[in-house]
Length: 218
Image (spheres, rainbow, N blue to C red):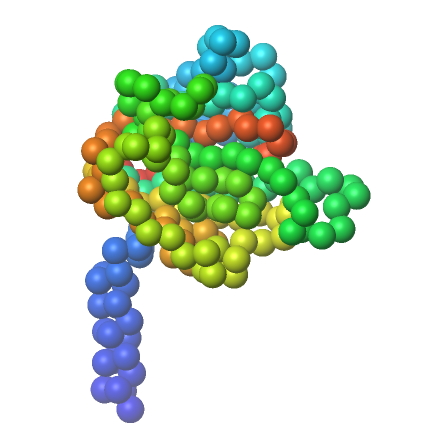
């Protein structure tokens, strides 16, 4: 019996080592957002300029994003190989009875780069944050060269009700990515022409809260 237990423990340990999504040491994580202010970030609001006039505000341990005007905050630092996790929750309208009727947009921008994008949105890989499309890959511009996959059934299973907290995880190795929502694999990127750049978070029409934004650099 002791031998069998030891074997099972060893097998479990090896599974943790072999799983590329497993990180045993919590201390490997560092905050991408310091939880107090926007040190280390810059802002872009298209013709509205670079001044954040209340679109992104700190509320306790969260960033409250008003959704207006359209724009984004981005890290001053550039990243290439990393794991990013963050929690997000749309503000639930008091009169919302059916989540299928909820319309709200947002997203995370990976590998922000110079060059033509789409409107206010920069050249980048968008990990969609729209409520019914969380984790969908949207190249910006759309002719950006990269392979991608998507699993709508997994997304539907993973996404929690409007107002609940969800967790998005983005594993990035240069031009390759794996995206998870609440622990389920949703989409991938392969061979993207963008391999490094700042990380951004969008303001896109509806109020959303972000928290526990953290990163592991490889």
